[in-house]
Length: 72
Figure 1 (cartoon, rainbow, N blue to C red):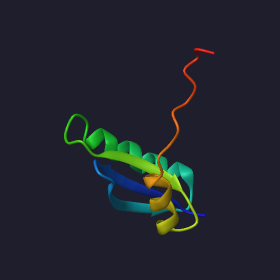
Figure 2: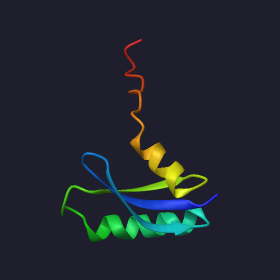
Figure 3: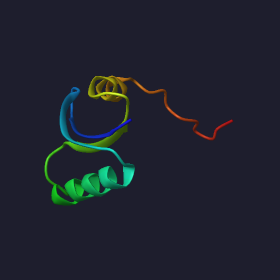
Figure 4: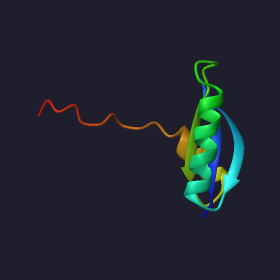
């Protein structure tokens, strides 16, 4: 399965920036993009591992449950 690099803006505005076969390549690209936009704009760069671009978009749009707070 490929790794997809996306630009994620508010209100689920997604833009596919790249696709790689290995995590290391995707990670290097994502880090370079994050460094280039440091402090500019409100877009986040995310790496997703999924079977297809559509599956990656679906994963990015899911609402996640908050993690544990440690107040148990």
